[in-house]
Image (cartoon, rainbow over all chains, first blue to last red; front, side, top):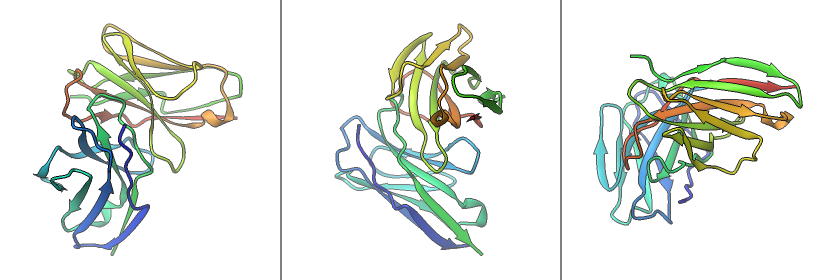
Length: 109
Length: 114
C-alpha cells in the first residue's frame, strides 16, 4: 500500500485559497488518489478523487502531476467552516484504504 | 434517503467485557468497512465485508470480529476489551468493489473502556 506524507497542520485566513500537498512516492498503477475531510466527532466525508491531471468539483480541485508521486488539494476561498482535518489516501478503491495522520487546517477570521 | 447509521452513539464498558456495534449502510450499498479512530489519529482499517464474507482485514487481533447480514447491515464485535480499545468506531459503506467512488461514513460509535 502506498504511504502518504502530508503537512501536520496549516493556517489560513477566510477568503484565501488553500493548497495542501500530499506525497505518495510509491503509488501503484491501479491506485487512485482520494481526499477526505473530517470534523471533530464526525465520520470523514469524501471531497474529491482523481487518477491523473486535474479534477474539479463544486468544492475543490485536485492536481496530479504526470508522475503521480504527489497531489495537491486546492480549496478556493476558504471559510471558517473549512476548519477540519484533511486526509489524502492512495489505493485501489475497496482495498482497505489507509488513512494517515492528516493535515489540520485552521481557518482564521 | 438515510445515510450510514450506527448504533449506539456512545457506550462505556469495563476491561474484559465484550461489545457489539451495529451499522446500517447507505441505501443501495452492499459493502461495509469498519475503522477504529483513536483520539488525534487517523482512522485505521479493521476489516471489510462484502457478500456476507470478510474480504479484507487490517492489522487487528482476532478479538475483533464481524458479521454482515443478508440485508447488508453489519456488526463489529470486540471481545476481552482493553483500555486501548477506547476509540471512535466508524462504519463506511460503498457499492461493490469498483475501482472508483467514495466511501460514505457514519457518525461513529464512541467506545470508552474503563
